[in-house]
Image (cartoon, rainbow, N blue to C red; front, side, top):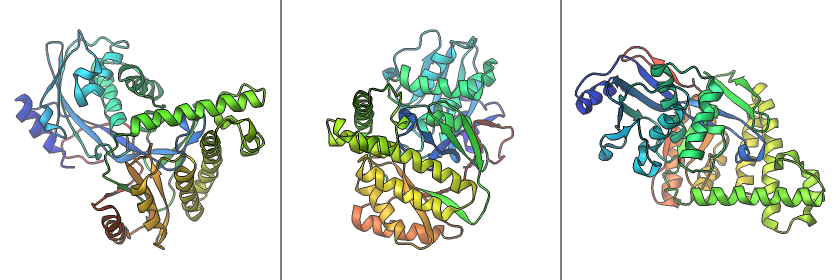
Length: 396
């Protein structure tokens, strides 16, 4: 990204140059461990070097005036800090309004801001552009108004923006992965205990690639809710059959599940529970392989994960399946799978270093032929969490 663009856009929109600081908040990929965060499992995400940038200027009144270069038709969105309304009033900037509303409980918002944003994450791609903005705003507010928050507290406020302010069902994985992002490292997060560990990417022979399906994701909210409801129902029936009181599906193992199958009232409940339990065990194996730089095994587990998400959890779709099917035919691809909630969005692939152009050509050709339009591909690296770039033109 040409970071000086932000300064010029801010000057054009707000009629003065902003402060020197450039704020950055990454997006995230989940390497493996999908739909486990609300089921008490272990996920393995990482922050990436694509994300959201912002510059700011101080105001003397109590207004926040925010502009996104990614949504120019929305113009400047005006947020009055003394009375922040419902999320429906602010469009894309509801994530900004929610962050100011909740951070107002932590620190005195003594004055307003002019904010200019530009993101390098493709919109609705499953790379957590919303969580990226949430954590960007929490980080900016902490810096400007002097809030002292831990990384976990920042992640928790970001989650509350979605759950409490916007009314969207989600776990904390996205916000946690962004808040705790560390260069060249993925994060193993136990979503039951919230214990985590960093796992450094130790070699340079392979690279991760994001493949955005460019498919609209209209069904994502309702289908996400359905899967969550199905998992809750499966857990309730398993507990009843086993006279237990386990808190999460991931507290069971596959042996327990298969022994309890007659206690489940629906084959769908069995399929959902099977994916969740199996994916949790698979993720633990994948983390061990990652630590040993056994990326052949790691890639094989990525393929297994996608197959389970396709057959058991039914959240992939023809677009994501096409990408993974093509990847399997390429000998320089170690593994591929959907990442995020599914129903469109993005896949990730682990490929040999130096083969991105070959991979891009192969994926685009098959996808165009079978789906009818082009995907978008981005090489990514595991990167830092929210941070400040102190000087214009500095890089990440």
